[in-house]
Length: 378
Image (cartoon, rainbow, N blue to C red; front, side, top):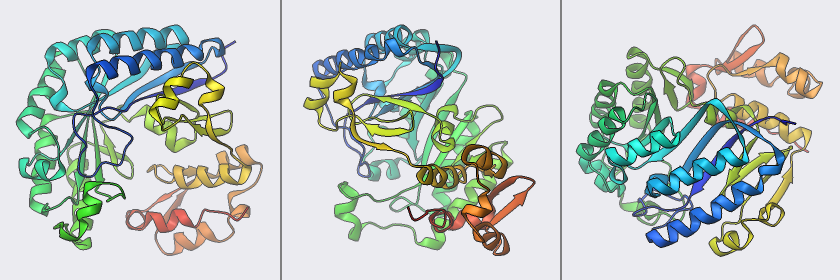
């Protein structure tokens, strides 16, 4: 019996070089180590075989998944089809660093079943790329992008980053316009967040970062340029042409279940959040035992589910549905959060249209403050 459709996430914890802003679980590794890791990942995938889960999205993330050999990618895709019922129209994404792919490899990915590429560009200005610690320049990205088109990819996403060191409104606009001219199907535009444990964190006193007003102007200019070019903002930092929204990421924002596989990967399954071991050795030793892999299990209480429904759902531009809240939790939103929505509506930070509640343009500027009001005392 098919239980339900899931999103599948495969974590590939390798990179050529750690970027200056990156706090993800990733590190350089030799080809031999990458092959050994792929073998462990296949064992974990097969451990799910008896559950007969159906999946409608697959996402290879990292790190730099495109560092895997074409053969490893093909074998992982074959293993996924063995262990899961993969929907024929499933969205299957591979994150790519432009420096790690060529036309031959991209063709092999497409043949293996990958149908969506997410390129980490970050900036179209070479000096900014160097400051970020990226291993590619803009010309190298362009070659990878056009190679992907020639390989048959009709769904390409490009990641961009604003508010980075020495960036100006002018240079950010240059990046946006260059990317718009390429006509990708999807664009993610995030602001730099300096995280502990990164090179930028240790050097933050010397970084020449845009001030808060400049960062805000960049954010609003992003929306203006992308919407004028036919991209709809469907989440605070994500834009897409109609029909090309990231189906996998929408699962995270809508509270849908997903299975994370690989070192440190997180899952939400059966109302329980858990993650795989962060330690590589422990992951390798446990990769065939799903029970041993589970770390820090947290069964979501009804309170936690209501909180996440609100503050994750409000990240989407369409917002949250009062009717859906009532169907899921058996209570009215206004009963659980008395006066909260009304207060924000009066301030012009939230708006209501029928059963839907969503952020206004003004509200997106202070979204974290709004989300905090949807946290409840247990």
